[in-house]
Length: 373
Image 1 (cartoon, rainbow, N blue to C red):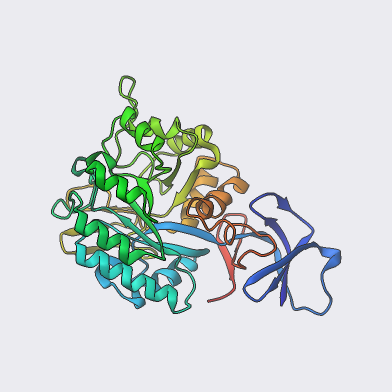
Image 2 (cartoon, rainbow, N blue to C red):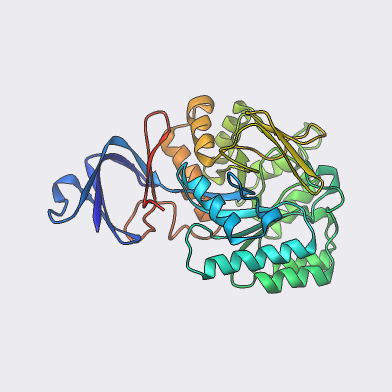
């Protein structure tokens, strides 16, 4: 056991000063006033910094070197976990962009094996595409975007059984009977890369879809006579949405407006193709990404994911968007954990929760991460 003290504790519910966190193994034992710190435990003085629950990133494709859809390996997952943990991310849901049936099934196999091995840091798998609207494919390969078949869908459902699995789809392009089958499976659905109308989106949300992928990007926008998917998300209290706060995918004002409209339904993702990298050109199959030190563009000039970590998104939301720090920490930890069903284990500093912590300075830079990996 050990104690973390001399910090401002952002619990996910409130903000505490003059308190300490008692950790027992990989679980939080309790949060206590500083005058009740046990005398017989090692104490780590956090020098007055901020302490928040480790971040949860449910959409990212790679780390510094690893790129899951290309590598399909344990080593790639290790690299993703380690790269993003360097910036305070405790757990990830590695993500596939639109790819072949064979690669999807292999990624499921690799991810399930990684989790079963007892390694920490990976919660499940996010399959973004290929069953999306080609009109809103963004940087996804036109050759891979397709309508699902019953055979492929059943293979994905069967092989991912027992694992937290997300799938981003454009439901308007799905055959109704296959969409119904998917909605009756264990797979959690998110609406994205979609050109649905407002009325279509509202109907899909009413049918049980409760998440949307990267608000504003690759979806029918808000217009006065056709409010689109964006306003359907705003207008549906049961729907949560991720957003990419990198300064390129969304203007700061659009994040601020969405936050005012959605409150705790808006959460952060990195959408990182790669992270913590130098300027370079990245190519895999027909996916291209050119990084200039600021953003990733494919050869057609479209955004090709980001090159940030969640900590970069946190910093942008606090320093540029102007959101309260306490709420931004929740957007990176508490809310995504809740959305994917792990909110009883992650995203809060509370007795019984997983003991992963990011220690940040007043400029939202990582000072340390507990426990060290």
